[in-house]
Image (cartoon, rainbow, N blue to C red):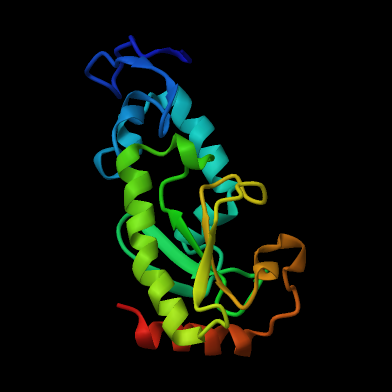
Length: 187
């Protein structure tokens, strides 16, 4: 248990419940899916901690569009964009828009939705980029950025899932070409 929200002041006319570091974050909303919660529900003391963390998260900045990305697809809850250090052409990252550090801290509903959103993206990657194996690999590594992200990697071989093979020499034209191919077949 992190603390209690039992104070009443001018900014909160109701007594707030016990807070916990939980399944989907900090606050009374931790047990609900991301579609059911907002930062309005968090205790003011903890909002500052969360906003600090989010402001320093590269993926949260991509969601807020303060950092550019090659956006493949998005809806209200999730965002997919091309990796800037791809293992393979079309390497795409799928993230929840609400900051969560660890994949297994997502609610069952949010984790299910993440996987369901990945399915049409993987089909589009397969159709657009025609990997030699006919498959798109899925990896949840969680080491590079402390924000849940699913790697969708078109695979010519198993070596394409080795993160030491990440490319840093990709030019904007290649990103744009891959993005165009993917979007032409998406959904």
